[in-house]
Length: 66
Image (tube, rainbow, N blue to C red; front, side, top):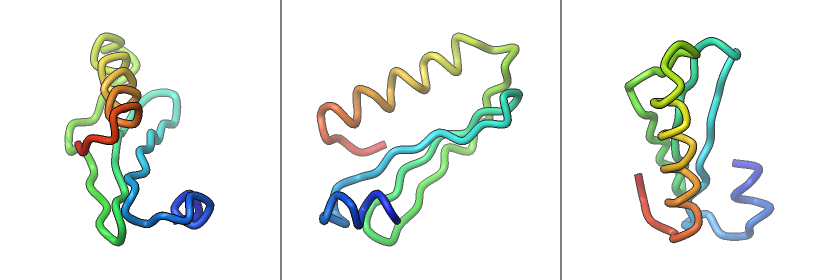
């Protein structure tokens, strides 16, 4: 929500990644709606982690939604 305030645009999606260095989770906040990817990636599955990071970067660059 802090990013939305800084952006001065709650409709612009904010993408995020949370990790404890073992488990990675991806999500999106748009207005008051938080969407979390239910698939959790572990450090043992680097292609899935890199794919998730790449997808978020693509979505953020093109303003698309998850």
